[in-house]
Image (tube, rainbow, N blue to C red):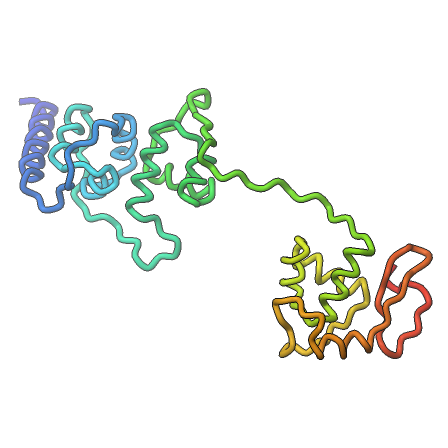
Length: 255
């Protein structure tokens, strides 16, 4: 008998034995075979070297049905090794996420859509798809369905600083309101408020124990601090600024 015929017979016998073992294997999946698992997906994952246990886990199918599909597609028999565990690894992919990735990938949804659904970066999605062996998809077949993706808010316009807004910041900072709370109440960013504190000449060494998240201009501490400050108007630039005790600027030192 030729050597090739012997190899073919052994390969067939191996598949029959594996299929018989799968019918009584405790590692078999819980549900019936999923008809939505595409042959190209299974072929790519088998070619990538994933074992029987991993394929059944990621595709959520029975071992006997998996092996039957492998035989029908004339694929190499996957190995019977255990799945590599990722417990304890930071940001490790969970089985449910992998299954969802496979489902969305088979629907030809774009990486941006899958990224938003799984709350992972597009680079992470592409890397995991390559690791799984998911098939490449023609660009013209990719569906850009962004209906369920939360739209990122448009970039806010540059804040137009006027004297009214500057006075709001001055009054709130002198009332011991925390700069984060000032940003929240005035619809600014904390970085904008911190920068404006320096530009306006406001005191930087406020007592941290007196800081509050609420605006309380009538508190005794706020009135005491306000009494030590001098608010002036810069005629050259038309802007207000604060003069600390001991300073004698006649024009705005910041501008």
